[in-house]
Length: 214
Image (cartoon, rainbow, N blue to C red; front, side, top):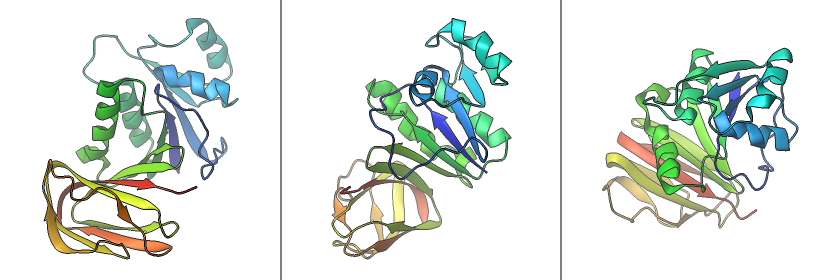
């Protein structure tokens, strides 16, 4: 099973490549992400957070419709999105897509991106989706095959520590078991040469950002 989580950032357009199926997908609204659900006529299975960005009048009706409300105190150590991710993990999902995680506040945007490096997500495929961009993190040792079109851009940014043993195949700028250092922009704006390419990592955390040409 996979989960689709709606965060309280910017969600201007629904990603064309992603379809939400309430029969097979676990749909979670992270607090104010509920507004995105309502905008797209999606009834989530779970609403989680301190509810400071939710219209409280909507919650009783949602509960009557079978929506699970997980309420937390405002003074807490986790963001609403982090709570939503943990709620998904407790339900044994193997894949998570996050919408609306970027753009509204830089502190929240960065916090949301760094969530991808959480040790708890090492064995779960988690992707932040925004329009034609996808962000996910490789936890070393790991590899991934990226599918797209020639000319699509892929940026690789080490997180937390240097990313060691980075090997790229099918890119304009290949790498062979090299290290990308934290703070270096060396991995920015690589380009797919064909419809698929491979990225592998030996050690560290590597943020992969795929920007599709549409």
